[in-house]
Length: 202
Image (cartoon, rainbow, N blue to C red):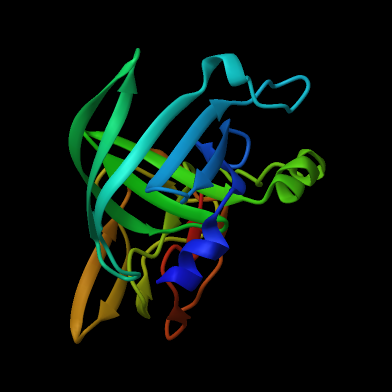
């Protein structure tokens, strides 16, 4: 435990809320007395912490291990010249490419933790590619395509059967959620499908 605290003493990193290009906070840890966390919003132009808006939090208890879905924490939050005691439960929803998706008091955020050097270089990262699947029929689960009921150029209406996918020995009928004309049929009967694989394009 002492060795772990020595590693944390005066450690610094950057926490980003809301995805790769979200709001960044400079966070520093000090374990001289108890685990004290200083949180400062970072200036978007200079990339430096705004120390005048810094907040200090003293963590008094933490019940969480990697892999657990719930984290229980108790801390003292700085409020003016006084500290108020707060208990919190944070739900870990899963991992993302760079961090974790967390839920607290109904708010859901992607949380990314970087070293200051990593955050400085992150401005050169390309934004994630956002693909529009609104005009596609995606496979909702891993399975086998049993049949495809439409052909290219065919017009379909809302609710019309498009394909049948078998998974866990159950056949699932996939229907059109919108009216339109079939632009492409990407899979044939017998194809093994992954989750969110495109079967049909409108």
